[in-house]
Image (tube, rainbow, N blue to C red):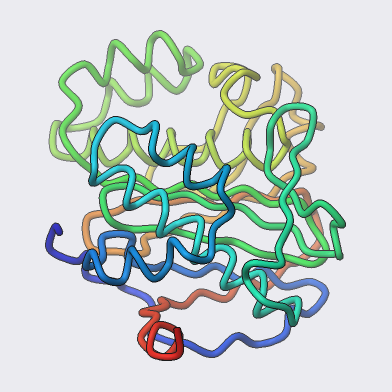
Length: 255
């Protein structure tokens, strides 16, 4: 098991009710001792276990199991049911949803030992997290998958800042694509996002249209030391975002 990521959000194990006009975002560790992974795997349905078993390495498989199990714990806590009772379905584009909907929108992302779960009872939401790391061909990837303005902006960044800005762009784009339900198949280059630490996080353009972009709100997230994240949701009104880190100790003791 890798060393745990140092979280930057306050630790809590208590779920507070979702109120209209709020978004709850939780970080959690996906790298956990094998005994905890085994306990959490018991919350999953057979198809979820089978999907995880097809992944390329033990570490990736275990983190996928933990991510899905923690998502079940959170949804069960908000809905007042058992984690195993959650039934998932998906949209036509493959976005996971609750089979009976039940008024809760959610999204899950994890990277290199850190997971994020975003929940709302009023707006479609997407979330993404990435470990900031060296990508040797980041400029090539930007020219291929980003807009011309984004790739030019990235090329103007000093070396140490370039990787951070690259992942800022990537997470904002992917959070939006997950929120609108189309995923990467929609095309990263079709959505243009603001870049830079001094710029307000936002969607600049969708298919070149600022009006469509204005329907969306983007949050910049730094949930762990060395990690970059973003959340996107379909709202133009003020939405309050609340962030915590879940360590799971109390929940796992009761399993």
